[in-house]
Length: 566
Image (cartoon, rainbow, N blue to C red):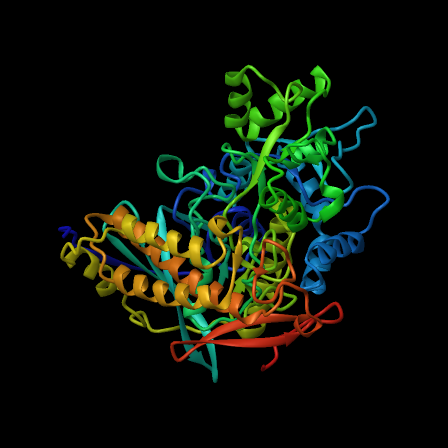
């Protein structure tokens, strides 16, 4: 279809970082300071405005305020996750939250302070910031490292592994430029996966023209999950999906309203229902869905009657992070003091920064493939990371990579150890089959919405529907392999759909494997509507000879964990 002639370029580095978001940038800074050799950071966009922080953020949601200790944060996350968390990961992360917060301030981030010079907190776990420039500040930190090279606008698609000293190790990755006809073969001694989670698996709240108006970054496709899984890495807790409670239509955050002005969740009758269902993250959404199912909706955050000063603060706060909500108030002529803010749940996402889904890692953030590390949204077991948790994990992974390189030593690999050029080229040679990547993406979202617990079924699923979802996703995987591309940007979109379909496949198997409802809405199993003690375990998976194998692992006890055979 497209007349594109690909040219392969080979790069050798000591450390390859895939993904230039929060965790990836911070890991690059720390690795650059450690002088471990050459570090290459590859990002499919540009590190100055990529990832979840591209547009900025108005609070750091993970911080240990006075009167609290890191163990308190571990307990908060454990309770919110109904016990299916890795306490070793949570503790090592929590111990660094304040340190990385202070480091951000030194780099130029404006953190609001009171008259005593103390950080202004929003609850005991949050601090308020002016964070529009948070990503450029991190990018500047990366660019200041002489040993770090940044390769923007390059999409990595596959990891490469090889038997080295009797064990399977990661030896690099391959990808392509999204702007020029270049294929990149990158050889590395260690690889850090720091890509984002997966958005766009399900039909969104606002389809069509506004389909990208969603809670999570629409450019996060689960690429790291897909690459790691295809390479044989073990995954964990994908069934612990994340659904955000958001302002209706604008999909703006609700925490700023709930915590900022103390607004309660009420139904259309004005009845406070959050006290009935609970106030953990999934319970808040579950209550909203149930009230609507009972005919008591719409549901709101009750802001009616707040002071004009509080209203002005809300308008300013949303103008900084979700301007659509401020514009909606202004255009309607009714501010939050005049009427409540209608709320709804989003479509589900797979994201290790909020729930426990992602790579199965040891305490040092190394995956089950030696030399492959994971941090941030792509690392499992440690929910409620948010910004500072991702920074902390990036730092932990960087320190672990330094130790790994010193202990394992550097192993040179032949320059022609793989070739991906033909796999990319086939899409340019493909005939028009009548299916575009847009068609296949929309079909995938329809399947997941209707058969795998999306908005259409109030997030509920059962084994019969999941079996159909599995069959239909497999069919779409076959079709996307033959999708035609006209240019490099088309090729990017095709691979993004491929990645999402792989994540869908893993997710469906995990939903089938956990035969209980431990997290309302996040994992609403209609066949097994109650919690079961039998499933106080991690549901893990890995790819073996083309088939997904489900592994049951006992809860990790203690403050340190190293990989063991299942």
